[in-house]
Length: 280
Image (cartoon, rainbow, N blue to C red; front, side, top):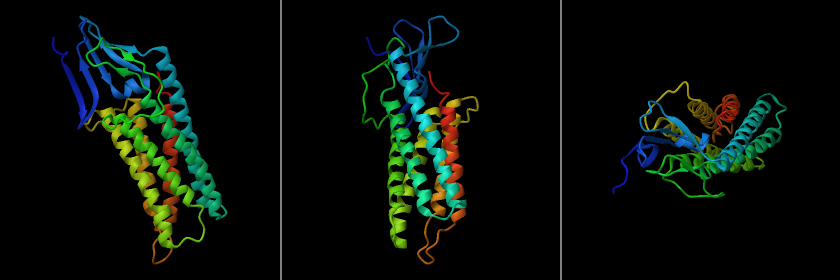
C-alpha cells in the first residue's frame, strides 16, 4: 500500500500546515504554531461534521506551559527594563553608564526569552504524518539543528538577535572610543540584531499565515507576532537614528533613538503578556 494522501501548505521549503487521512478514516490537520504552543492538532472522525482537538500527553503539556511562562515573563521584564533604560537616557542625569546598566540587565532577560523560545520549538510534541492523528512527545533536548522548520528558524533568528544585542550592550560600556569604533562596535551589532528580529517576525507571519499575507484579528498568536514585529520595526528605527555621524560626532537623532527603543520595548512587554495566555 502507498503512503496516505497528504496536502502540505506553507512557503518555500517550510511546511506550516499538513492535512491527511488517518488509516482509520476521517481527517487530521497539523498546524505548526498550534502544535508547538498549545500542543494540539485537529482531528475529524469518519462521518463527523466538525473537528475536535487532540491534545498531547501530560508530559508535553507541562513542558509547554512551563517554557511558555518562562519565555513570556522574560520578555515582559526585559521589555520593561529596556523601556526604563530608554527613559533614563532621555530624561535621566545624562550618565550613559546608568542607562547602559539597565539595558544590560534587560538584555539578559531577552537572552533568556530567546533561548527558552527556541527550547519550546525543540521540545514541542511532533506529529506523525500519515499516522492516527496524534502528537508524540520526544525526549528532552537542549539543542537541535532544524533549519528547514520555519518555527525553529524563526526562534533561532530571535535568539541570535538577542545574542548580537548582548555584544552591543557590552560594548556600550567601553570608554574613549572614536566615532568609527562606536559605529563598528556598538551601532553595527545593534542594526544586525534588529535585522534578525525582523527576520524572526517575518517567519512568524509565514508560520501563522501559511505563506500568504493575512490578518487574523481573532487569533491570539497572530496578535503576538504582529505586536512583536511592530516592536522590531521600532527597534530598527531607533538603531538607524542612533548612528553616530563622523563629521559631527553626534547621533542622527538622539530623541528618536530613545523613543524608538522605549516604544519598541513596550511592544515586546505587551506581546509577552499576551503570550502568557497562549498555552495548552
